[in-house]
Image (spheres, rainbow, N blue to C red):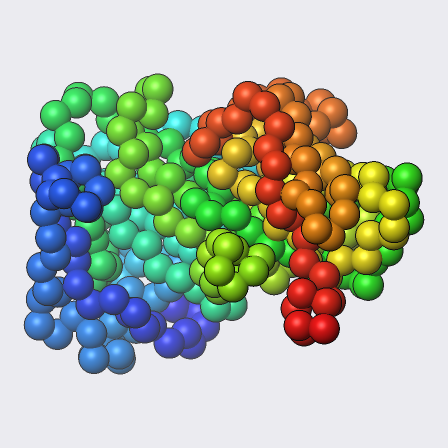
Amino acid sequence: MCVDNITVAYSDTSVNKKCEGGRSGTPAGHCGTTKAPPGRVGNESALRRRFCPPPAILPSGSDSASGNVVVMKRAAPGQLTPTLLRSLWDPVPVKPPSPVYASLGPVELWIRRMGEDWFVAYQRREPEVAVSPPRSLPPTAALEELPWSRWISSGLSDQIRLVPALPDRSVVVRPKFPLNVPRGESALFYVNIPVWVRVNVGEKSDLTLNEIPSVILSNTWFGEPTSGELCYALKTKALRDLEELSNHPYMATCPVRVENQAPTDLDFQRICIRVEHLHVYRGARRLWTNQVEVIFKGEDFTSQINVLKYAPKLEGTSERLCAAREPVERSLLKKSFSFLRSLTGF
């Protein structure tokens, strides 16, 4: 049965078909798309009867009378606990024909295996649904309505692991309030960054099936019109007090220390964080990234960016869950701040 009336909507009516030997310009193993079977989208009442969005799916299985997936009442999205933080990112076995289900709040995932083929489906939820670590479900006909994507893997491993990765472009964030860092001073901020969920196969995460952004971020341009870069704009703010930051399962907290070595005060509107150079760590209560140090030398100069090579010590974090997309061994020199003058043209 379904205990709350939730509209089911699919934003993509195609099902990706994957195979070995991907084409040029596409992810490895991607061979194109095939349209969803007729009737998949458009019969909303039938979909609601057959597949109610599962905020929390009972491990006991399905309703034997109707064949529908059994769900519990929607739970309010909560904060991470140490047990949940560990179980979300630990490997789990996939035993055909039973799929594995997981939820991070704004996105739900289903993973199953049939022979050498792996299938992944996901849907976005607004409002968020209850967080659920990966767990096995009984197979039901309702699951066939999901927009599955397929990969072929010749490996014999039945292990899958969800891995939190950082976005593939730099992110731009604003401070909560107008900020002025006097010359010679420094300030420490904390920024929550939505992770991308990698679906990896194998005990050592040998194969990545897919990367799914937990939150869709809008694009923004950072820098001058002719020399800037395309970034993602964060909805979260840079905060001074760590206790003000939520510890949702789909957020990684990045400590950013800003040091002003310019002869004038630093009054900025936005700061750019190069997340492609950061690792993701599992702490006691939240996900973390390396600490970033940004040294400001003046509006007309590039900033010195130092990425610390170790995890923050605030929670005794030591376990690295995901390596940086582009590791760096030395300091970077890049523009890192936007000022009111550069935003308005005055």
